[in-house]
Image 1: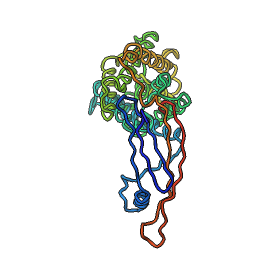
Image 2: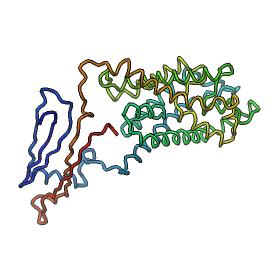
Image 3: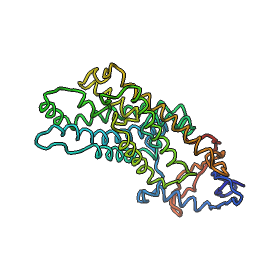
Image 4: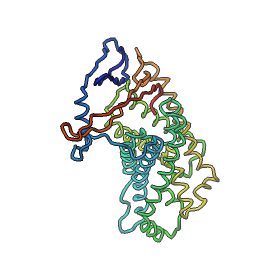
Length: 367
């Protein structure tokens, strides 16, 4: 069967074949593996034993609904991103006016911390949801048909809630330091400490320049992500991709962080901004620059990510020579074996393995 690899299990008069898609090549040949009924019985018995090594047993997900699993992954990944990233900002801001210690961090350290925060967030969530951690990235992935549009609200809700929850945890951990800082500066819930959680522009920055800053920075982010995950490009090992994405974040911050702190992530900015408005900072978190700032780190990154996706496809992705359909583009016919565990062979209550099968066809892109 050209273009497929398969395995066949034969016992008595029943044959069940499992078909897996692979990219078609001229040298691809069908391969079949025959498994006897006794082998299937023995395997089912071993899996049913309590002392069978856990790493060899199939793991059943706690939640069978894929949307729930991806929501939880994006929530936790974004939580990790904000905890480490904004935690570094909190350490810098709250120590900057402490006469006994002085600043214990700097702008360079914040950029490194944010790069590591993104890397660890992607490591946490990547295997389940892809580790977007950013509504703008999720929107661009939908445009590129790498994420279903109906999943976009699930991803976005998880990302905003994860950022909001992480902000609450940061305030809890640094609450005494915040009170100490406000005593030293004779202030109470001002924008200098609100900047721990969300981005605020420099006094000289116009909204037009700020919007351009966010569009351009997120475009660079999206270009880098697509380049690092394009199998036809340099194709780094997937185990180091999160580190490389983190270095990309650090590079953007070190190059373009001066204007407004390079949020380039609507969830990273709006989620914490809503939290600070609820936690005592009030409406000033939205009214800064006469309400002409808070929307920029939300709208700008979405525009920038879409532009980045278009630019990468126009300049790079659409020009690979000899492009062939990948495995993801091939129709898949999946036959699933449903097995009832057998009792030990040779026992007085021995029952053979009972099986049935079901199948479905899948031609959609990665969900």
